[in-house]
Each structure stands twice: as structure tokens, then as C-alpha cells.
Image 1 (cartoon, rainbow over the protein chains, first blue to last red):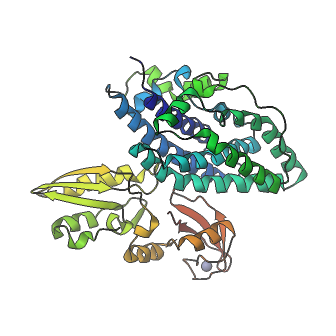
Image 2: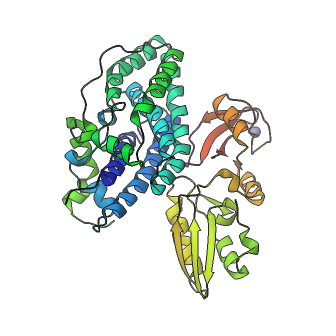
Length: 251
Length: 167
Ligand SMILES: [Zn+2]
């Protein structure tokens, strides 16, 4: 049976938080300082809390007996709708912060818009997660400024990470077919309406951090339609290992 | 709106709920934490709506199990439902709860504007739970659990947790 657009839209919201949450979980115990380690792990936990809400709801919408765990563990990479930006690796701390910042600004704006969804459950999840996303964007913006306006070395690393990752943001600002239909139906957000605020906010923080705004063109990316980089397969291999090895095992 | 549970549900049920505490802050009952939204009693069936503090907080699962355990051996069968709407805010922590937090060594949440000043601008507003000094500094917006930020006192030099304002 063909999955409904609502179902796929819920997955696309959840997949972003799941993949970023997983990337952050890889840093647990490996953060550059104890405080940043705890912070990144906390953010990961918030994201997984949000994912559970989305996937529990998706399971209800699908109504074929699947659970939140099936949705997380039994899909292949082609059935994931997350942004390419979020599967990029933890190259160094500057990359972790740049990826987080470029998503957090979008995440907050998108959740703000989603609170007005005609779908009561999506709106409730957005109200709840927005409070947490507000703390996340404070954290990542603060670090962009500290590293950008820091030492020569920290500035060079932060600029390098922004130069590399900024071109992926084109994907966040261009609605996928799933998002277009979701907006038309009233339960999704209008990506075009978020675009200007996103660009302005990102540029404002980068300017405050004394970083140069990249002028390179946006990169071709279709993660939201299920076309991913090789990185996602490695993430899923790790994430889904137990269920793939012992199908339907219970903890 | 916070429902006054003490005066709207049978005392026996209220007392059972008041014995369940936050597993990470054992001095704080779920009543004082304000996570019990609504309790419906029909004959010997109790339906409880629980509001998560933070969405990913693993303590929520434990609280649900602890509620079920608390009712074992009572005359009631209990059903616990996690609800997202209305969302929990730190305003729901009772005065008694705030006092218990402070005595436990966790600075209770202050109002939104002060919270913002303390966490963003580094203003000295959150008093040290050890010596009471307001000469304190934010170490990290994220502390030992999802609900807390980490501070240190610049006078007695002790680190302490601050329960973040969430609205
Ligand atoms: Zn002190």
C-alpha cells in the first residue's frame, strides 16, 4: 500500500531529529570538555524525545501494527527523508557546531510555524519541542560566536566548517513534494515563508561571529526525497545493528 | 491552569500519588513537580494524565512505573497516560516543591526574564544553594539532567545545579 503524505511528512520531521540526535550521541564521552560533552548529549536526548513523539504518532497514522521502534529500526536509507546536512560527520568540534547551528535556526523557525498546524498532534509536539529547540539555538549560536570571534585557529576552523556545510542549507529552504502537499493540506509548514527569516538570522549570527558568509552556490541535495550520501548507510548500520542481527528482539 | 488535586480527588489517591517522586530529584514529589495534570476516578478505576517535563527525559518512564507500583495493593486499578498538550512549564512546580529543591541543593527556577538574563547575559541572579551568595557564574546551560543548568559559586567555589525555567 502507498504511504499517506501525512505519514511521510511526520517521518521527515522525525528523521531530521533522529539522524542529528544519533550524530550527537556518537560524541557521548568524547566531547572536547565535560560541559560541552554533557550539553551535546542533552541536546541529543531532547531530539530523541521529539523523535519518539513523531514516530509514535506516525505508527498511529499508519495503523498497520507497526510501532515507533519498527519505524526507527526497520527502514532502509531510501526510506529516510532527513536533510543531507544532518548526516554529515563529526569532522571536528567546529563541524559539530556549524551543523548544529545551521539546523537549530531552521528547527526553531519550523517548529514555530508547526505550532499552527491544523493537525492537533503535530501542533502539540511542536509546542513542546519548541521550548527545547530554543535552548539548542542559544547553545550553538553562542559557540559559533566564541569560535568565530576567538583565536586565529578557532576562527579558521569555524570558517572552514561553515564554508563546507552552508551550501547544504539550500535543501532546507526548498520544499520537497511531501512538504508542499503538507502545506497545501494545512498540517505542514510553509518553507518559503521561513526562508527569509532563516537567511537573515544565520547571517546576523555569522556577522556577529566575525565570519564571512559563504557565497558558493547551494549544493545539490535531495535527502528529503530519500536520496542520501553514503554517510547515512553507516549511521543506520550502527543504529539498526541489533534489530538487523536479531530481528524483533526485545530489550 | 493548575488543578488543585488535593481538594478535588479522594485523599487516599492523593496520598498515594504524593509518595511518588522524581527519580532524579527524590525530594520532589510528582505532585509538587506539577506533572500530574488530571486525575479521573470512576469507582475503583483511576485514570492519570502525566505531563512530561522534557520530551526525552527518561525519568518519565520511571515515574509511570512508580505510579503503577504505588497503587499495587490498593483498591484501585490505575492507568497512566502521557500527554503533550497542555505542555508542562516550570511554573507548575509548587512553592513546597521549590523549597524542597533548594534544600536539596538545586536552585529553583526564577521567572523567564531573570532566567534569560542569568543564562544568556551571565547576570548574577541565581543564588548559591550552599552559601546564598549571588556572586555566581553559569558554567553550562546543560547540566546533569535535561531540566538543569550548571552554575558555580564564585565565593564558596561550590558547583551547583539550577532547575531551568521552561515556558
Ligand atoms: Zn556559595
